[in-house]
Image (cartoon, rainbow, N blue to C red; front, side, top):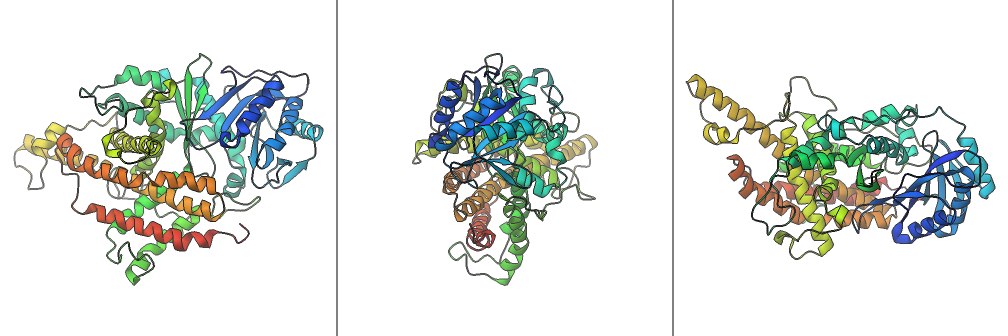
Amino acid sequence: MGEATTPTAIGSDTGAQVVFHLFAASDRGETGAARDVLSRAGVTYADLRPLGDNASGDDVLTGTATAAVLADAVTALRPFFRYGIAVRLAGPTDVVVRSDPRVEHGQIVIRRPRRDVPVRDSRALRSALNGLLTQGAPDPAPLPYPPSLMFRDHQSAELAAEATRLARVFTDPDFVSGADPTGTLLDNPRKLADLSGRPRRLLDLLLLAHAFSRTDDGDPRVRDLRIPGLDEVRRVASTVEVFVQPSSDPESWALARPLADGRQGFVIGLSPQTSELMANISWALPTLFTDEGASGADDPDSFTPDRDSTWADVDATVASYLRSWRPPRAATLLPPRPLIPMSMPQGEIPYGAGDPYIVFDACGLFLIARELGPILQGRLSNGAEPPLSPFTAGLPRGVRLATQADCAAYVHTMNALILGAGTDGPFIPDFDNIRRHFHHGRPSRFGRTRRLEEQARHEASVVLACMNRTTEAVLSYYAVVDMFAALARARGDGALARRLEAIGEHRETVCGYMLWIKEHELPDAWGLRTRQQGEENGWERVREYVRHAQRHLVPTLVDPAD
């Protein structure tokens, strides 16, 4: 692993300097080869690593070198990478280098907006890099970033600016150019920063929820739960950032990045495709739950007219999102066909049944919380693993840890969504008042009691809406993962399919955990009935739809050439 220092330029060439971001797969031996080549070239680099032993995603080696040194290093890596190498510009001085299955093994191409330009050797690559670096205006210094609204004084400007840089590095240019032919997103770092503004607010809410949530720190043997408090969370807030990765990649992830002061920083990349498709599935879930035309999970091929009609719109929406996954070069993408309104419908109220924003927030929160949970537990910096909870017994150890993370993300998402319901600050329900005054009968005739009853009804409706939308977000997440897994397998990406299928192994246990929480924990804490009789039957109807999509919809999205 490279030294955890600020990258510096080393090399004999006096030409243009580049900030390189070299993607390498550790499971294929590419990371070791890249480290060796860069070290022998005298290049100091920082190692951005996916979190966890079995984490998805590539290592990213980032540093600064001359165009000549980088060209020599990339040329030397050709035999060690599984596929050919694509090199592209990701800003005035940022160069992305990664293995690409669309490039023949041993070949190097310069990735341009509409076509790839092959280069034969190191000299040709050096010339091409120097040519690329003469284009475009320099970036502002420092790069813009979305400010934290709740932890502004503790936010790391260094890490936040790096998150904006990584948004460009992790961009899929074919996806962005297909969806936005003007190309303004990639040329404007302020737009990239603004794109991550809402996820940054969601990260703040998750941190705030953790500050006031009783926790056993992942150890079910602990009897005296503790409150982390704001001081602890402020320290975490200075080491974690989030950004939206403008690509069709279905996986969200977290990278560990060394900071200049020697601490470990973390950057979470949020998948917009998964988040938005989750929101659409979540919006459709009440219809799927109550679909009386469903014939049962045993026969997903037996359609009834009612079920066929219910699923038609969902099929069209799902297909419009899945079709844009890994678009061909120079393809123009058709816009998605969302079921969920993209703005607040007229006459709807926040946190009401027709509020789309709570759905988007629940989905984004859950994706971020899945990555944030291990960071909050602190075990990623000291290498420790938490004890295994009894409810995951019978699963392999790696699956148990991941399942526990998803269960924790469910609770963190729910708490953060509730806190975010406030207009002038965090929303703190008065659960004592809810226990005393919430009922479905006629309101009291006495003014003070009537006001307390109205407050209890309002606050109860908010927390129940947050619970329901969080539950739907979790169900939607597993549905989206399953559909992307089927698409990846159909298109021949077995590695991605296996990673996504492994996530699906958590579903049954996580759903059991959600039911247990709703039956035992929340009624005691809130004084509300939170589990509906037979609601798991509706959840099974969602699984039935997913099996339909895998069997009937995904094959229509696969090009025979794949």
